[in-house]
Figure 1 (cartoon, rainbow, N blue to C red):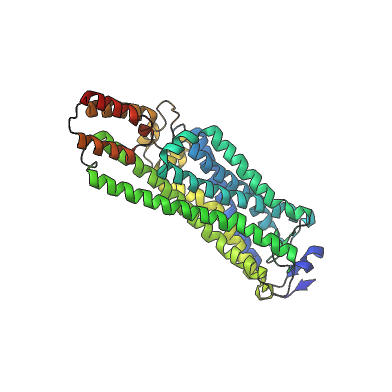
Figure 2: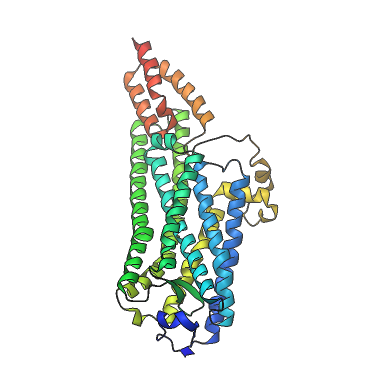
Length: 406
């Protein structure tokens, strides 16, 4: 039972799992691409998980979110690519109705988890950079894990409805993979499709955009304040705090690149689903359904590639624990030997506690010897922009200074 391109419907696919009349090389090409994506995503994300778990210097609350993203992408790779590849070789779905539902459920669960995790990463960067005091008080490993439990429960809640009759998990495209039913033009299916896109794509995307707009504003204001008060060429400790803030911005840029690539990868798939939602599913060919699905699944490889290129500590960690990759990542043996050689410390993503304590003491000594109230005021304002934890004790410093003035 074969259907010509563009004539197959979801209703037809539910029963006998038919094939689509396309050249064999189309199936083999897509199968090869998905196999490469699967191998890259599996190995790459495993290395990310391994590096972050082994390295003490990378074990921070914010990095738990990165590990979770790698876990969801890793599970996406191992559950989707082998099945998709096998079906492409057979040129049809061969795992039955239950296999189709399970496959599509895994794709939905891990895909939603990745998107919501990216939103959490963006919000975490937002709080660290724009509200450092709040991030110091709130974020810890325990609370980060609680947030991730909420992420997985939220993703599960949106992945389960097709099992209970609200929409369905069915074959799509060239009928070698499965997804939720976005082709059937019924009120129930359309309602699920629209709510799914609102709560797992558009709203998280708006939260990400909101976060980075204010991150850009905070960085711009901080740079302006530093130039105004002359902190760049003054106090060495304050200059160190400024560099730490710049490092936070570098991490935010890495996260932004990953987020943009993820959104770009899922956008074609979103457009296809929304075209069907609008009632124009008849214009969609099997290729127009399958190719966006492959691009979306390829989003699982972005995270490890970006970290391998842009994150020096990650590269060094991999070279340390997987020495054979050192030359590929351009990490010298000296860097590998020196990496992670210091005692583990529980640091926030804003600054090292020990460095801040020393800096605070130095700051107190400098302020105590200052007689110019205007310079003290400027120094305190610089510290506001450049240090998070120092702000917690800023009143103590001010009291010491003012008492000596009196």
